[in-house]
Amino acid sequence: MQLLKEILLRPLSVLYGVATSIRNILYDRHILKSKSFAVPVICVGNITVGGTGKTPHVEYIANLLSGYVDVSVLSRGYRRKSRGFRIVSPLDSALLTGDEPLQIANRLRQVTVAVDSDRANGIEKLLSLSNGRLAVVLDDGFQHRSVKAGLNIILTDYGRLMTRDNLLPYGRLRESLKGLSRAHIIIVTKTPATISDDEMAEIENEIAPGKGQHLFFTSLEYDELIPVDTSQYSSTEFNRVTPEVGVVLVTGIANPAPLINYLSLSAGTIIPMTFPDHHYFSKLDISKINEVFETLDMKEKMIITTEKDAVRLKDFINIASPFRNKFYYLPVRIKFIKNEELFIKIITDYAG
Image (cartoon, rainbow, N blue to C red; front, side):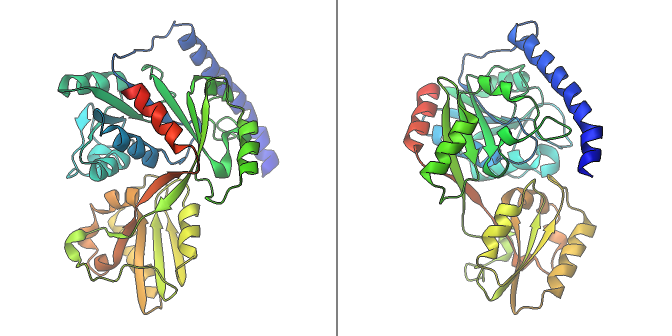
């Protein structure tokens, strides 16, 4: 299988690399134009396909800056059914906004969240709506070079560092590692909280940040469980994971392994039900989840999902009456392993 993959996909990766390199050269030589703006624009992206934890990092930065300036988060709204520019309301459906923008809008009520596949147009619209000092945080967009961000932040997953990957379609790289030269900050995400200084030094040597670039390490921290359908719960509902509890874990994210590992430390039994990333759940999916939940032979049991999945599941939770009072999501946030003060200073100095 590996040999067949080499034969079929390696040549395509070479062609893909040539195409992306030519495109980047055209931008670097200003043949293709990038638009700059007079307001701070921070891009949080990656050069790999798949989840590197962009959303919690965007939330961290937007929340940080909301105490200083008027902050807007702009996303393309991946897989949304609407078109053009749209302000995201917490009352929206994920079908109209995309799941990640809706998650951010629900969590950060003090921040304006918008979607537009045309990033330049989206920023222009946000400028016209702003009454104060505006800072824009781009959720993804590192490869969309029509907008020139003043601060580029690149994320790479500790479990699959970009330096150990290959170009699409053989690997997961969207462009060659030469693209890292456009980054101001590189963050290794999903890092074990117990990582040693020696291992961090080894990874830093491997990534080899350039002059003026900063490297940080962040880990994931999980908050308390929250009901997917808050109208169905009282504060006394059972919502803790213990060895006496069985869990059906429903995920539609790129990499559910960290969450599975986390819950395995405390749950008596865990049954993962994995769906594709950004999966829009159907009535049939809900029925299957219910079937698995009913077969779980434990006195206490619950269904747990991610915060991103929860905003998509809310469209169907009204039909999930057999188990909706046992349906929770687990919020996640980032924590810096070290040098958080330096990161904060870089961000606030640029946006201030």
